[in-house]
Amino acid sequence: MSETTFFEYEGVRVTNSRFIVDGQTFAMNNITSVKPMEQKPSRILPILFVILGALPALSGAYGGLVLSVVGVIWLAMQKTVYHVMLHTAGGETSALKTHQKEYLQKVVTALNNAIVHRG
Image 1 (cartoon, rainbow, N blue to C red):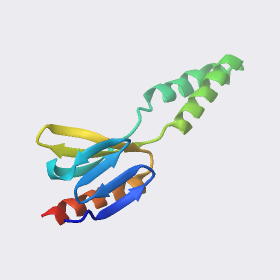
Image 2 (cartoon, helix red, strand yellow; image 1 turned 90 degrees about the vertical axis):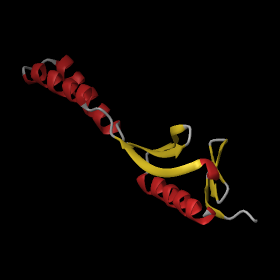
Image 3 (cartoon, rainbow, N blue to C red; image 1 turned 90 degrees about the horizontal axis):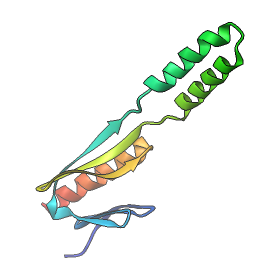
């Protein structure tokens, strides 16, 4: 049986027999299901920086202003991490992490197509 490629991009490859990501190979016949997972960053500490920095900044203290600016930059830099979760007989594992939701969806779709293709 020939190997059919469902997805290939920057070191990630999904075929009917293998899922290759970051140099690690997962056998498709061991994968029972695939699901996307979204991990949102905790925003509590950066918000505290903004609030605690804003209070002294209102009275003219520059230290508070700096703390608020750091909090705002921290909030702006935080991004949601998306995972491809693989279920196997051995348990669940995060096989791929990315900040790009559309990319993750393409990989999950390719994995599901590969599972259906193998029968």
